[in-house]
Length: 366
Ligand SMILES: O=c1ccn([C@@H]2O[C@H](COP(=O)(O)OP(=O)(O)O[C@H]3O[C@@H](CO)[C@H](O)[C@H]3O)[C@@H](O)[C@H]2O)c(=O)[nH]1
Ligand SMILES: [Mn+2]
Image (cartoon, rainbow, N blue to C red):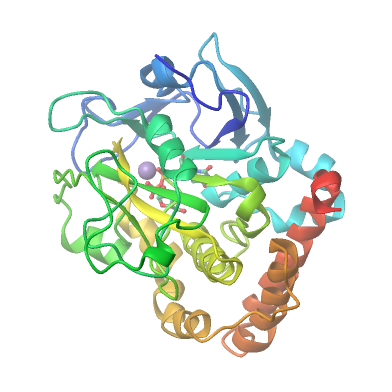
């Protein structure tokens, strides 16, 4: 088996699981046992054939004194809250605590060109032929092949074997543009919001769609952090997962915030975002009632946030992702601050994030 980009890609895993946690799940999954018990990072055993040669960056959320068991044979670095405070000092407050948003610290501290991030309750899915899906192989294919954000190809990814641009597709656009993000999907438990989870507790995603698409320029999308890869050099400084979790009025909008910010920046920079293959098997439904408490403000705030991003234009003088992000932070302060003081704090968090990024990535930033 090939391990493409093995020296250029880090795998970032946020985890708050420790020991065997008996988690109430809507339906026991083969991998999580009868009561959904998932031991911490035991999921790596299933990924070992695909992940072992790659370097892992584990972000240990919650109690920093907890011991995390990491299966033998993996090359990793692990950061807990004390490490984040020690490394970022007066900027550490911008990294969320008690929310999967903490994963973005791994993006900042990595030294590699590519990142793949996965949740610790996602396992190897199988394609309709029963073949285990190598998510890294597909994400890397997505990232290394161009995107087509300026004109939609109705036969999906034109760069895949056995397909092409269809009649009427402008030849001047067929070279495509570099791909910044690759957004994978999930079989079994879909990434639904709490109201949908509550209305459809038993719904499982069994539909495997063999397709990768570029999300058109000017179109936002709900980016999920569960199975996501991106090019750090093209969009890394935009991948801040916001202020979520403990002490914040909102949770479970970490990846959504990063998705909206990165999409407007990718559109401005002329690079692409893809969604579709690969699939993971998402094994655990988080508690919909807990999720509702985390999400509810986001559910009505986003009715104002989305038009804000849809109508946003970044200035021509913003020519790097960092400059775009700092301009975006000020637009957030002015354009969303009226909704809740949270957005003023979030704008400050966006600035602290870039300061932290520059501190840990001096050469690139210069
Ligand atoms: O406080 C926390 C909670 C969780 N984690 C780690 O983050 C991922 C996702 O957690 P989980 O699988 O429990 O939650 P889901 O509802 O399935 O996650 C989806 O919702 C998004 C919420 O932001 C998330 O990105 C989606 O995947 C696991 O690895 C947990 O261990 C954490 O670190 N801290
Ligand atoms: Mn999950």
